[in-house]
Length: 333
Image 1 (cartoon, rainbow, N blue to C red):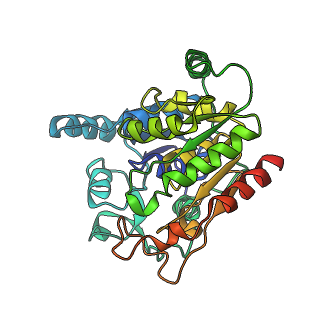
Image 2 (image 1 turned 45 degrees about the horizontal axis):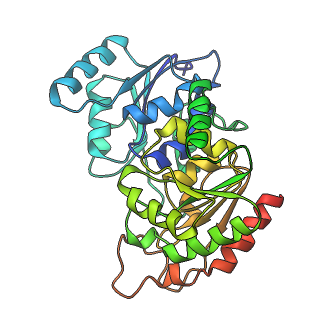
């Protein structure tokens, strides 16, 4: 079969999942003779990926039926050879089917097998790393894994990150990022007081501390920064994804829960320590050269639950001293 020249990629809807898909995106972009790639994803995620220059066209995920119909019509007129459907949802496969892609590659899930021409059996969670699961989809059309560069950061985002630092009085010295939130739920949130213990160790080493997170995590991050006193600030809710990526790229270290921000820090090659609770690093550890995992799972882990009725033993098992040790280790490396 001839190599596809027009490839539609339905990206995931979450930050961490999109960054785990980067190995696939670079593998597909490197296929000969150079396919034209179109991507569909939430607009903020497309803005984050824009500096990589992988897509000939990027379409923001519509918010209403009329928007979806218009997008389907445009894409159908483009006549895609292949659609790679990364989300496991029925709607993702239905979109590829409506766009009349000749090959539609994805995992069997939610009764959508009949919408796909190449329906792969989905591994059990943690059996294969999520990045490898995505690469397996690309292998169906001949894409081969490449050396993955750090996530590109745009000049405007880098300048905005410098402005954000100076506006909070961070100066030019080294700083570390603490990310105490996780949208997934409490089963991913290491206790805030242990983040504070890490923060005090960082301050003692002469680093400034920046608490970062989503707008919904502003109160959490501000409370953490306040508990650390001078030398610590919060930027949660004050940066978009490209600016947050630029901040991570300039940080000396990031300590985070298993969250989108952990994946972002790892993607820009920031030394990163990730605390895992109910989820599995074998499945969703961030992709990057300088990543260390802090995880001491009890017998009930991984359970992949958002909340726990027996007391978050997985998170309680990870002491602050262990995370601090991992932080010095990855920073030195």
